[in-house]
Length: 385
Image (cartoon, rainbow, N blue to C red):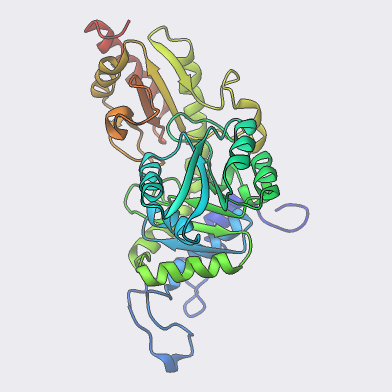
């Protein structure tokens, strides 16, 4: 417990925000599967599309962790992210990163092509580039993703917020890879924080969910809640229960993932078979200085490597791993590896030789041995070099 009497994030998580069931004293919230509620009960609950008792506990916990006013859970990370943009008026200007989650980038391009939004893409790691873009485009929203998937570039949130707010724009930050344990964007001035809760918050690869946290319960929050209601993009009771269960171990899982990712990054940084290691925890990473401060020394469990020999070599390394599983997603207890370019398509800014690694909670010695063996296999086949 800190000097002012508040408990640390790890304690809040472990105890689900201090939950105790008022009826039974149970420390684990019950799974309430009912889609409708009897109005004479006095509970204030009406219908599941608006009232999900377990989701409400998870929302309160997420809002507390982020230092926000309110949180809303959605049926997926994409549902949460697109709701933020759909809450904007037609024709609104949006600035988004050149490097970001590929499916949301594709969706934004479609919105721009249809005229629903005016979207500009900018190098968010370059504050000067953002300032110039804000001068060119009347902007309602600046969307930041940091660290940005899958190159793990870093945006200085506080600096970006100052520029955006001076231009009359709100700022939303996709903080999925950082989690509230490393970065709290609202404390740096952001207006909204978005999470793909399927990833680190849940941490067990057994549900799909998203979340939005707002700095204040204003008209934007009201629009987001209305959009969720009207589209039915709500999280089901069982998924909300799984999410809350997963969040209770976030502190332990994230600490292990961060430590193992750093170990792997340092090991591979000197490997002649690797062209580059992209991890903000390394001192030579362009965003390291900002990340060290902004992420409180926790650089996350995600890194990418560029394999010498191009796309064929990268594909061969991914195919040769045994402990790292070839699969999409990130933030789970199991370590994953993926050759990203074929996934994202020809218009992606991702180099063809890039492998994305999501580091789980396995023994790091086993993960290192697996990567070394996979690199050796590709080298023996004459692909690396």
